[in-house]
Length: 298
Picture 1 (cartoon, rainbow, N blue to C red):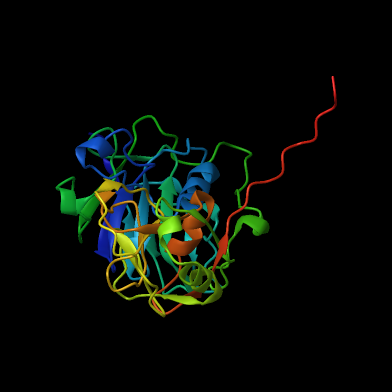
Picture 2 (cartoon, rainbow, N blue to C red):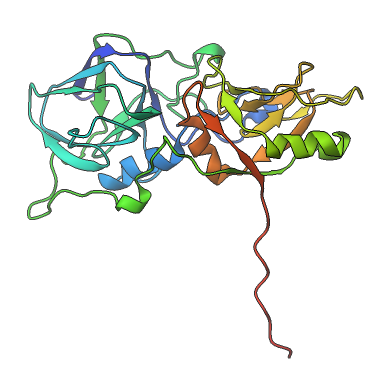
């Protein structure tokens, strides 16, 4: 393995390597994993010229401190940092012994750091994504060393300035849009009043949320008492346990479950949901299919 490029002085509230996750293993009970906010993670990779599936460093909230061990180009996206954090949603070059500290963000939960060429790490079932509960790797700790993939250029190419993300793609996590929800497998088992209440009331993110699932706080919904067999569960599935308070399955969540599912968060909106903090208010709206394009008669 080549020489390390970053040393994790402090992991803050949590740090792990994540990529696009592992595909094709759900039937064996292995969740897909991967970066929770794939929108921010993909932009981090695009900024430094990496393929979208390249491993990135995922940081929880604040407190992480890294020391640079040799020159390299990095990008930072995700949770909004304090206003003078110049490196947010753009690339910048670092020199040996520089220090990168993640201060408390004004909004959002997850921050992503990418290096040109990507991080090099062990793979499990084709992915570097860490899943400690399943025994696939472990979260990074203080003094962990991060390695860059071999043959990656250390700095930006000559005559190429810094890159940054268009402001329209830099999300304000303090003000998420209403999240689109498609009907779940058990949609018809819920009384019409319960379905209406699901969309009409605001929900708040519970402090008991993590990479396994985001729990919501609000007025409980009526749950059908019909026994259900266990069936596949997708990230974004909105399950209703017996207490009637929803749980939104996340990337490290179970692959099967027997709770009724009132809906599934649209995959494009799931990255908005995961950036919402405990206590933050969200709303759901029914997802609709776009109209089919008009065709000319033959």
